[in-house]
Image (cartoon, rainbow, N blue to C red; front, side):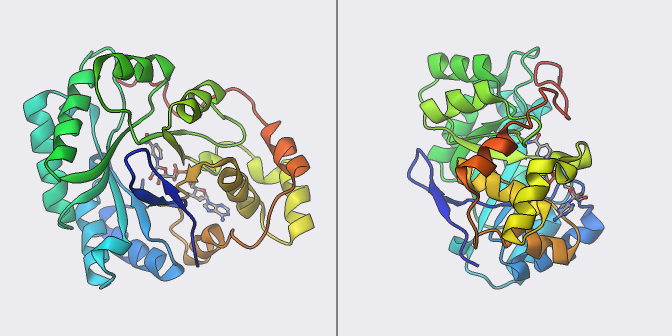
Length: 275
Ligand code: NAD
């Protein structure tokens, strides 16, 4: 499997498909990550919140795959944005992962009512300078949050990881990111089972036309739009299915028909309310 890479605004490369480990409990994470490695994933998306950093790190180390071939993201939870807490939080994540360095470290949510995300971002800038993480970015940032970072800090985030799938595309956020060199990662890329994406007519039609599954069509839509999807599955045949999306191209008409599935309602919390 040859997953394409995207060049980030800091010069680092990121595999365009990542394996998400949200709700993979610690007891299962080592096995799931080992199976994902076997399926060909090299990019893994975890977070302090997910409670599985130690198990994810252990599976990656046990694989014997050279560190530089792996790409590992973790995230700072929003109750740790105060500078001293931020240092403790990344130290804890690094100790649990035990991979020498983090590839991409994200502010998990802006939590704007706390009004601490600019200071937290400046802490991440220092972590990058100190070599704790190769790249830094944000998650669940809306345009006003990104504009504030642009005004009050020196570094443009390398990525913004947001809820993004055909039924909820956040076009204003994506347009801002594309215009400002911020790569867009899609969480809940398959709609988290909260939307019947796999039963939508344009998805079903494209799946038939290309001899693939509806999930593969949705992931292919992300890749052709330039998104970095982070599909999650605990099932090894679905893991393989979700990375086996490089052998076909959706037509422009198929892409447009899927893009027309926008419904305008998020599945997760509103970033201004997640405090
Ligand atoms: P997802 O859209 O990847 O949906 C996962 C669910 O879809 C699975 O539990 C499974 O039931 C189903 N599924 C997966 N592959 C399938 C297939 N081939 N066919 C049919 N059904 C299939 O949603 P997610 O897991 O919530 O999100 C993916 C990753 O995004 C997470 O694991 C996590 O890493 C990240 N995430 C980040 C945030 C954030 O705030 N930054 C929030 C949620 C998730």
